[in-house]
Amino acid sequence: MLFNSYIFIFLFLPITFAVYFLLGGNRHAQTAKAWLVVASLFFYGWWNPSYLGLILGSLLFNFTAGSILTRGRGVAGLSCKAFMLVAVAANIALLGYFKYTDFLIANSNQLLGTSIPLQNIVLPLALSFFTFQQIAYIVDSHRGLTREYDFLNYALFVTFFPQLIAGPIVHHSEMMPQFSKARNMVLSQRNIAAGLFLFAIGLFKKTVLADTFGVWSTFGFDELQVLSFFRAWGTSLSYTMQLYFDFSGYVDMATGAALLFNIRLPMNFNSPYRALDIQDFWRRWHITLSRFLRDYIYIPLGGNRKGSLRVAANIMTTFLIGGLWHGAGWTFVFWGGLHGAALIVHRLWKMTGQTLPRWAAWFVTFHFVNVAWVFFRATTWDDAMKVLSGMCGFNGVTVYRSLYRVAEVLPFVTNSGEPLVVLGQFWVAAIGAITLIAWRDSLELRRSFRPNRRYTTLTSVCAVSALLTMQTAVSEFLYFNF
Image (tube, rainbow, N blue to C red):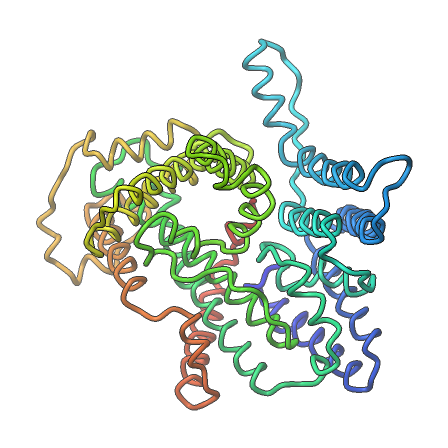
């Protein structure tokens, strides 16, 4: 079930909300939480009911393993550490089977000359996200950082529908205590107003902005064989904008939906395209993934404690894993390697004591991120090279006189080969980039939110615009693929 669908907005969400607070308001807290777990499982099973057994099995296994580790003893002759490693390995094996089996087979066939048939395994929704969440729970149980949680709270921690499909990658310490608070069973008019506001903003970002940019980026990446200079830059910037508004929109909708239930999700997005260096970018983009990679991969590898060469190796290893987490493909691995290398270069640059002017720092950071996204989006190396060669001007640079005919540039047709398409795509993407830098994002708006006429009007305009746009098409979020 998609956030940006009529059935979610007008049926699932209001029914789930009403029953939850009806039960909670009558002091049936456990029943209310059980209802929310069942509703979340229904939300997950809407995509494919056959995978309900997968998430339930993962949930039961990890809760049991965490409970054993919390008591400080191993099982079946294994020490606590050995049992923890077995439990983590089991989670990785589950993720590896569904996500990387065909990737490994294809590469083995190419390397060894074998002809093992691909299994064509479908990746279950949310597997990458709820697996990482539970790995963190297992490791923290071994570290003594968890307590004996109630199973219902744990089930809600894993399945809570606003964050289930595409994050944020929530941490047990910030979520399960919220599920235990009796006051969260009481309706909050302010939280309802703020939640609807954020949900409307996110829905607008997804349906009006991200999906529009998506048409342009898909046309350039998947349909054209050769890209001119302006077309290539328009294509890359369109995907950069699409991914931003798609992911940011999902985060806003997830945060807003959770707030309706008085649950505060952790910050996961903070104007990343305003970053002045690559380290700052990763403090702003997919914040909870960055936190997981730091706490459960980078630091256990040694972090920054064992010399410069070891630090560089730890950074690169962490980001190669991060790239592979996003997708089973060498373009994802290369994208992760690019960011790892950029962070190493940034670390060396800081050691020199040199600084760039703010505008130059932003320019370098944004354009590095934009170029790296080409590998993230491309399905093959050839697709990536097609776009990058166009961006470098290898396929020619053409300046159209119609550039100055603004009235014709804006209402362009996306599947046309006319120069107006190129110019409209390029300049709209450029305007979008400027807007991201200069305009307040939803996080800042949430901090200043007041349930007054101004915010009511903004919520209404965004909601109506998005709902009208949804009549055309309903598309999945990009992070559903990861």
